[in-house]
Image (cartoon, rainbow, N blue to C red; front, side, top):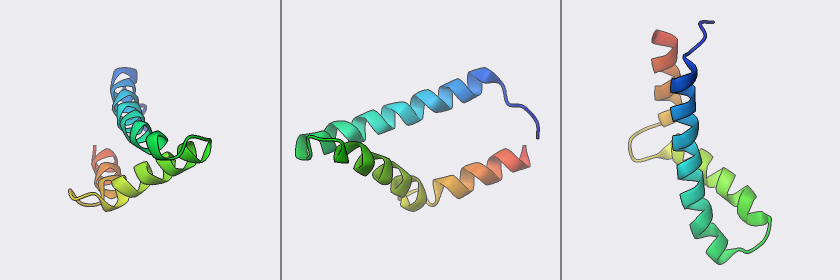
Amino acid sequence: MIARPFSLVLIEAILIGLLTLSIYTGVYKLIKDTRALILTGALVHLFFEYSPFGNLNERYCKYLLKA
């Protein structure tokens, strides 16, 4: 496997972190305990699997393997 540049991985991590934070902020308004963290993780995962843009997990993996 070819190592990817740290800067690219860092950008991906920041984007996922911002998405997670935005979803968590909304969930925490409804559920104010640790269940909010679990629900946020599940919602982020579901978003990437069933987003209106298609299965982003699958598309991203195909993009990485092609490169």
